[in-house]
Image: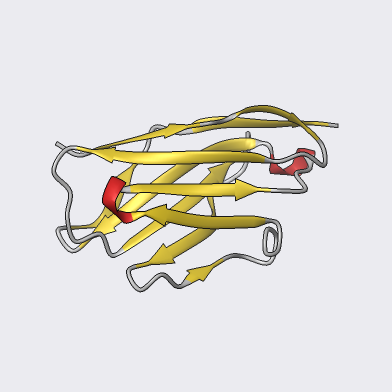
Length: 117
């Protein structure tokens, strides 16, 4: 059974940086895409970064230029480097891996990122 585990979250001051990671365990293959989402209290979950099999990345305007997604294919791990953080970035961050056999994606359990002002 595939499990995704996020790590690296925590508390950071506004203007600071944080890197979160998500590693997959279990038998997983043919990863088509890896992505990060976040959900703040009272808000819907929103997509914040994605990387596909050819290495192309994409971001919404809200984080473009501040967040960087990267991956280590051999480790089935995806990273999210977050710079110039603001309190509005505070949320639970989730990773998602999409494969042909599970198009709805495998999700991590989420990790809290809190940015203090």
